[in-house]
Length: 461
Ligand code: ARG
Image 1 (cartoon, rainbow, N blue to C red):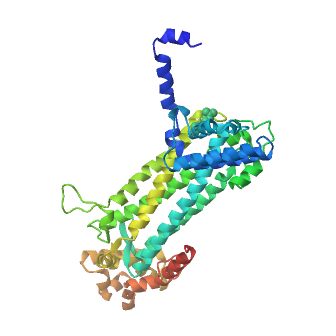
Image 2 (cartoon, rainbow, N blue to C red; image 1 turned 135 degrees about the vertical axis):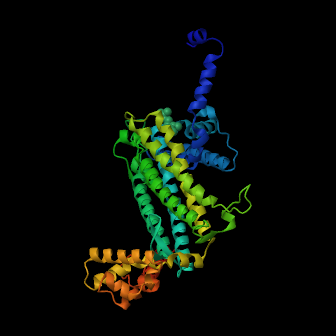
């Protein structure tokens, strides 16, 4: 059978091509990390095979003992991963069968198509729980920081221009809210990951009376997939996870960007601990916020992984295609990147020192309360558009005469609008301005304190 090929291509070609294919096609170099779930899946499948009479009790026992032995070897770094066995599934099954004859029965009613989908779902469920824990730890670190520097006032920015004064804690709590939505999106992705595809076989199930619900129960899945073709080809749960992580990474990137700006000499609001910064090989004075920059930079790959996943799926005919092997590196990279970033940012936030003077100075510009002056006029009955215009004239006058707006003579203000009385200038107090914001969601210190308490409570444990 192989002679024509040899004759045609000569010499060693057939072997060389096979080797290259093996190298190109293997996935064990990265999917080995599914081993724990592959073994758990096999033990559950074997237990079910015993239940329906395919395996004898002694065979089941031998298979379980063999799989456990393999797991110990992998844990100890002693397992011989072979690239010629393509992937994690073949490596484990082939080694088992070498040692335990009954291993040859393990794959009954199973295909690698439903096996890999099962393994990845198990792995991802576990991963989502770790991510959620790390999100909560970062939320806690933000809340703690808010409590630590509760009285610090900074300018809030729009268009990166100073806008209105806010409590630093209020700014930090904005990220706690974002992260909560990330947490919830992951919980939602978890629901659709938590479905067992095993029993779908290669595409059309099995003629054997497999007990899928029993396997689902053993593996802790909430339900089983309802269509065998969908079961082996569905990777929506990975896309959803990658999408949730992409947005999470974007949030982490924005937090990092704030920290990078705040730690610059231009802002000077914070000083990131030495352990989380580096120096320059050339400029002795430099202290660079590398962790925050890397966190911002790594967002690119997490977003890219989502695009890669969508592109991977878009042209696939039903059902399983080998293309799907490409899902794992994108998935693993996404999971590792967000997990590491969450962990290191939480750690770093514990080591950020606030420069209250710099923050206070930046927030002290009375112009940041110009809107409060317009509100004052509104309270006296002036329509807002007119009030906005009047205060705009006061700002222009302050600029022209080089006078801080809160020091403008009342006579001059009266020329702009007769409604102005000396009492109007009392709006130029940060504490008054913050305290007079009474609605839910405002940076009023009393309300921010309540929010910090609410979060402390809900993040407990
Ligand atoms: N390593 C493969 C993957 O990750 C496992 C499934 C292989 N199935 C097959 N029919 N070749 O997708």
